[in-house]
Amino acid sequence: MNTPVAGKFFSLICAFVFGLFNLATFVIAAEEQIVIDDLTPAQLRDEIEKIQTEFYRVFNLANNDPDLEIVCHDYVPTGSHIKQQACEPQFVIDRRGQNANDTRFSVDTLLDAEGLQNELSAEFAKLTEAMNAHAAENTYFKELNEILGMLRGRLNELSQ
Image 1 (cartoon, rainbow, N blue to C red):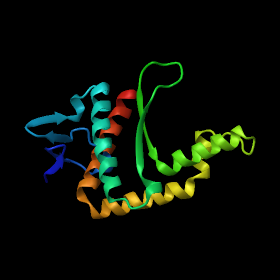
Image 2 (cartoon, rainbow, N blue to C red):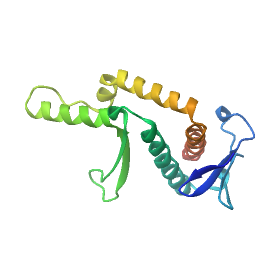
Image 3 (cartoon, helix red, strand yellow):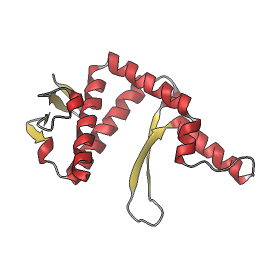
Image 4 (cartoon, rainbow, N blue to C red):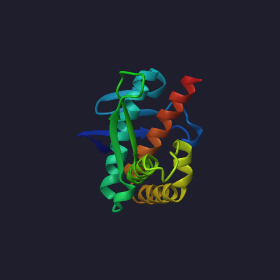
């Protein structure tokens, strides 16, 4: 099961079902074999970023709704000099901007992340539905999602 990623091929060899987060799973990139168990947290984060970028790229290519497009941007958190990347749907970016403007003109109160998520729950459900539909149609997209799940599961395990 070969799949292209930036001119290389990836395949996923699972010993157990994805839900078990079997950490003996392998991801094969070109001739180099990467064993998830052997990756450090920093290496896991790098792999997650690479796979996540491809995941969003593939979704955006298939997506016809501009509000559901996933947009990634760099930012520097307050009190830090370390650049980070955030990826979020366009509908979140639009609503956050609208909320900031409304707050500035005393028309609305500033929403925190949880308030924004609660207010946009219908849009998030629509995004989930679109991603699930794409995963049902596109094996490559589904595999990217599974790899992301395993990498994030391993990173979470190492963080505890």
